[in-house]
Each structure stands twice: as structure tokens, then as C-alpha cells.
Image 1 (cartoon, helix red, strand yellow):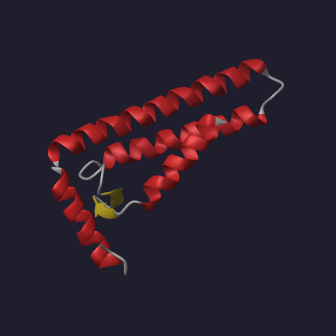
Image 2 (cartoon, rainbow, N blue to C red):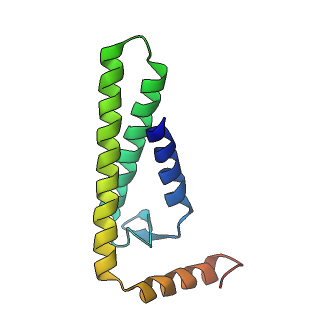
Length: 116
């Protein structure tokens, strides 16, 4: 259940972040800026972990299949978290915090009616 909740939360959270068009795909500007391949790998890992976690919940009378799906869900979640950690560390070293905040303010001013 924890992997299911975490996958849903992470997927929803990254859908709500400001995005920009990079190489014909939408990429969040806060963490995965200039890293569309890492963002796509992150999304695929999240989808695989969510699917495996749901499979564990649906398959109850086959212990081998359930164990395989559980291990696969954990491995996919660890993969997604490691990709997120990699992108966060790369983003933290590349962009100082004041530049990232400035980019968020520009995006909010351009696309929303509420901004600070």
C-alpha cells in the first residue's frame, strides 16, 4: 500500500509543477530542467511501480507471483527515487536557489493570475 500511495503522490506532485517544452516533451523546470530523458525515465519507473503495486493488491492467492510483483514494485520505486535524487543533486549544483525562484516567478506571472 505504501508504494501505491507514494507512486500516486509523486506522479500527481510532478504534474502540478511548472513545465516547459524541451525536445518536444514537457519537463518540470524545477528539478528536471534540461534533463528530459531523466524525467521520462522517472515517469516510467513510477508507472511500473504503481502497476506492480496494484498487481500485488489484486493477486492474493499466488504467493510466487505476488512476491515477484512486490519485489518489482520496490525495485522500480527505488529506481525512481534514485533518478529523482540524481536530478535534484544535479539541479542543486547547477542552479543557485535565487535563479530557480526567479524562473518560477516568471512562469507564474506568465501563466497564472496569482503570483507573489
